[in-house]
Image (cartoon, rainbow, N blue to C red):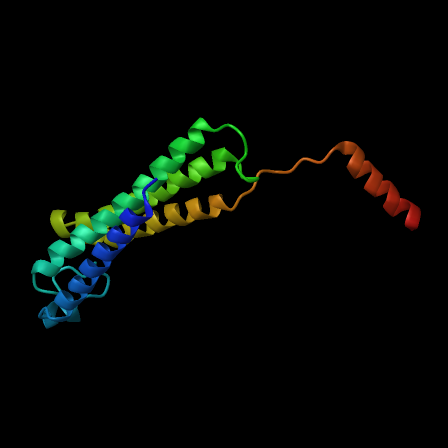
Length: 165
């Protein structure tokens, strides 16, 4: 889909931005009062606002867009294909892509809803639904189509077992 050069440049940029965010986070003051009351919360308000937040949101958004983009592209390719793909049922793979997309979108929404809309109490519930949908999608990717064997082959094997006993 893209050239190797574009992939390497993207990797280098994302790696540099990730290192920058890590440095910014380690140098950001911590609100000890909010940290002492973190149990059951999404963790908002622990670090003081700064450039780290903008970069973190940007990198997380790019990650979500990448996963969603790949899921949509893969699902679209599967939708157009009607035969099995390496022994996998295209319907299962399509549903797997849909569930991975939904799970990733829910996980992204959980943080956004907690930080910007004050829905911190529902953060972990939304995250749980997101991870359940995502993991179910991953499990579906491993389901192969049932292999049907001719009836004669099954009958021949059962007769062979009966003659050796």
